[in-house]
Amino acid sequence: MKKVILTLLCIGFLILDNTLLPFFAINTFYPSILMVFVLCYAIVSDKWDALGIGVFSGLLQDIYFFHGFGVNALVNMIVCLIASYVGESIFKEKKLIPVITTFFLTILKYILVFGLLYITKTKTHIEGVIYVGPLSMLLAFFMYKWVYRLSQKSYMKKDWKFNE
View 1 (cartoon, rainbow, N blue to C red):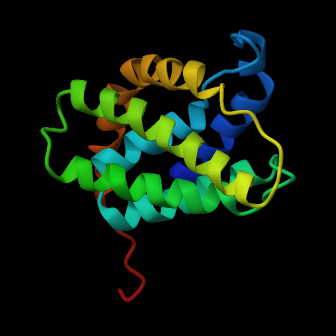
View 2: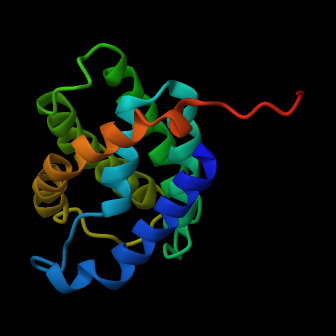
């Protein structure tokens, strides 16, 4: 059940990212609801769940990323693993550290994507990090408690058992 819910949420947030959020852009830059959700979920989950949701969300983002397919999957995987390691050493009930972590990891994600695209000689803009980092932090402030409560539900904790 957990995988189905996470898949549907990721697809829903991807649709919102590409349809609704451009209307709220500041200087043509806006945060990604999908990325903020994935980072918040990676903080409250273990490293294997973080790895899976990072790769899956990156592949979803790569659908709209024509010049560097696979870049988001790689970078999201790295960033979600870092978020998972941060989540192991904090009190997950409090939202200060997760919100600050989301800010820095969002900036790291965009710098890594810029660096990988620069290596492949693909033109991109780095100045979006100035806007996306703080906007993602603001979004994480409102989203983290919801993600934490979602992760505490019984159907999100129970693993599937196919042997029984």
